[in-house]
Each structure stands twice: as structure tokens, then as C-alpha cells.
Amino acid sequence: MRLNLSGIVRVQSRIEEIERRVRPKKDEPRQEEKERFVDVLTKEEAKRPSLPAPAPAPKLDEVEEREKPRAKKPSADWEEKLPELAARYGLDEALVRAVVRMESGGRIDAVSHKGAMGLMQLMPGTAKMLGVDDPFDPAQNLEGGIKYLSRLSDKYEGDLSKALAAYNAGPGRVDACGGIPPIAETQNYVHGVLAIYARNSKGEN
Image (cartoon, rainbow, N blue to C red; front, top):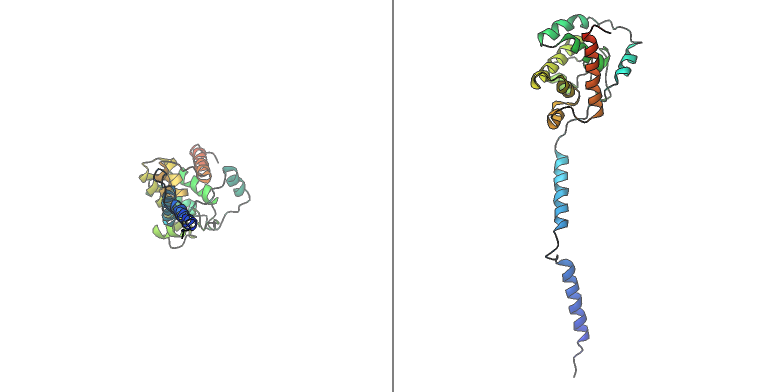
């Protein structure tokens, strides 16, 4: 009696085919493992808390246009307090006025779409950190914003561009970039404040 080996050969061939598919070739890179590793890293990075994106800063001409129809608020006595507060925290009065103008246009009730409030547009967390109980109280808001800007100026050793960028985008982004972050809103903000500051310093409106 002769054995029919054709069936056994087919089974053996099938087993070898499956093994070739399952077993990776030795000379090929472990590309799939690398891709999985990158995916894990990406997911872990995404879990880390990130700084919120800065609120879009208005362009200089938008600030000027916004101020034209603006009626002066009853509590505009903040302007009388500004020189003393600026001096207390070692900032130039003209710089503080430039920041106020760029941030809120001098409106004590200003609220951004990101939730920043008052004259110097303090975020709730920042206001709390600075001891500001009522961000819509012009005196509290002004002192809080000046104090914060002063701390940033000290941190960046008087580099106004970095201090202003940090005021707008957060010091974390400035530290990560080593300068003004490549964010259009922040770059526009720094340029606008410095332009107003230069004009204020020359006595121009």
C-alpha cells in the first residue's frame, strides 16, 4: 500500500507559509515597534498640561479705532493712580499706559473672549495669584497688572520684548522659545505696545 504524501506536503507548506508571516525577518528593522513607541510618546505628551493659547491681540490701528467712540467711564480716576503705582513697582508710567491701551483701550469693564478682565485684562487665575479680589475694580486691576508686569520685567532682566510677550502668552512659552514665541497674536501685541510706548514717551497721543 502506497502512502499519499500530497496532503502532508500541502499541510507542511501551509505551516511554513504561516510561520513566515508571523516570524519577522532578521534583516528587517522593527518598524512596527518603532511606530508603536512613537504613538505612546505622543499620547503621553498630549496628557501633559499645556499653557492656554493667548487671546488674539488687537492690531494697533484697531486699538486706535476702538478708542475713538469710547466715552470716559465714571471710574476713570484710575489714571490718577497710575503714576504712583507705576513708580511703586519700578515701571515707566508711559509703558503702563501703553499696556492698558493695548489690552483694554482703557475700559474698566472689558472682557475678552478668553475671559481676561478689566483694564489690564487679567485672567481669573492670574488675578487670584496677584491678590486681586475684584478684577473690575480699576485700582485693584491696575495694581495687579503692574505688579505682574514688574515681576516679568525682573525675570527677563529688563528685556521689554520678553516681558511683554510673557504678559500676553505666558512665561512658559517665552522660556521655551528663548524669546518672543512665533505666535502672530503675541508678536503683534509686543509690536503694538512698544509702538504706543514710544509715542507716549515722546508726548504724542
